[in-house]
Length: 192
Image (cartoon, rainbow, N blue to C red; front, side, top):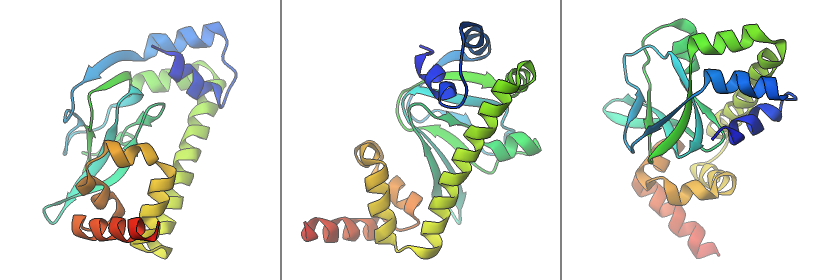
C-alpha cells in the first residue's frame, strides 16, 4: 500500500526503514468513489492526497463553464497548495474522475514531517519545484502553442489519459471547446 509513496520520496531522498515508518504514521489510507469531491469550492484545503490508484482533476468554474487546470495520476500528490498556504477558501475543486485509492496527509501532518527531518523538507521542496516546472511548461504552451500543438503534447505526454478522461474534460483542460477538440482529433487522424 505504501510502496508507490516510498518510490516517490525515494526519487528525491534516500529512505531508510525509520523514514518509511514515519511516512506510514502520517499518511492514512482512504478510498473514494468516482465524482467524489476531495476539496469543495469555498472550503479551505487542509489535506494532501497521494494517489495509489485512480485519477483526480483540479478544476474551477468560469462564466458557468468548467475549466480543468490539472490532472493528478498514480504516484502524484494532489491538493490545492494555494488554498492551503493562504488558508483562504478555495476557488477550485478536487474531484475523483475514477474510483481512487489514496494515502491522505493533513496539513499538520505535513508540517510535522518537515519538522522531523530536513530530508523530508528537501523532498517537499523538490516535489514542489518539479510541479512548478510542469505548470510552467503547460503555461508556456498556452501562450506560444496552438490548440492542436497543446493536444499533441498532451497526447504524447499522457497517452493513458486520452482513454481515461472524458473528451469534454480534456477540451476544458486544453482551453478549447469539445467541438474544436473533435476537429483537431479528426485532422490528426487524417494525417496518419
